[in-house]
Amino acid sequence: MNNSYELTAAMDADEGLKSKRKLLTVVSLILLALSFSGASIDEANTFIFKIKFANQNGLGILLVLSIIFLMIRYYNYAKTYHDKLYSLWTNRLLDNPFFFSQNPYESEDASGLIVLSRNSEIDARVREDDFYSSCSYKCKWLFCRYLVHEWGSKQDYEDRVESVNVFTEFGVIAYVKTLFFETIEQSKSFFTHRENLDVLAPYILGCLAIASYYFNAELIELLLFLTPHKK
Image 1 (spheres, helix red, strand yellow):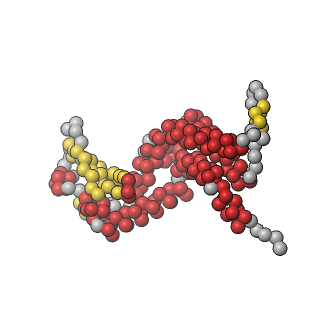
Image 2 (cartoon, rainbow, N blue to C red):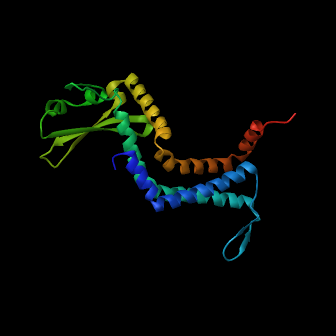
Image 3 (cartoon, one colour):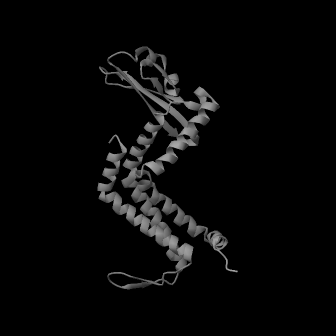
């Protein structure tokens, strides 16, 4: 899949993903409703018998554990789409002129961090017919950002890979600009590519539901503050 349309179509056709997303969403909304309204569940109907809940705290813990389990199960099904979404937004990011810009009339006239981070071998062989090279964007822990170059000859079976740390190679200004453009691209993706929210919204709901349970007192105070008071 090389575009967001194909990814969206695949997600819409994935029944396993949709069923796990629905379960996680429903359970999260139940816990959120209990936390926001202060309601309680006295009994539940099953196919065989009725269950009466005497310990409401135990029910809350049960819902929290259910959400954690469902989030893990959902991630099992969504992992493939996480990887594809990551590939899509990083490719869009590297299209930014800050990373790569090329004169349409002069193929050799290119600029940007990708060009500056290429080693001498890539620069020397980039115009050879049997030579290929590509660059990808890598996010690692502690806000480490890398430009990963992969290159080789079409006649060889082994690729060579080199990771260039943006901060250590280009300094603070380039690093801050990189994080800025990354933040803009990721934020924009939530508004222009619906598949991002399709995948991430269940996690957000699940985390909010768990937080609303453990910080219920603070939540009630916030709700009272936001509720308009009649004079």
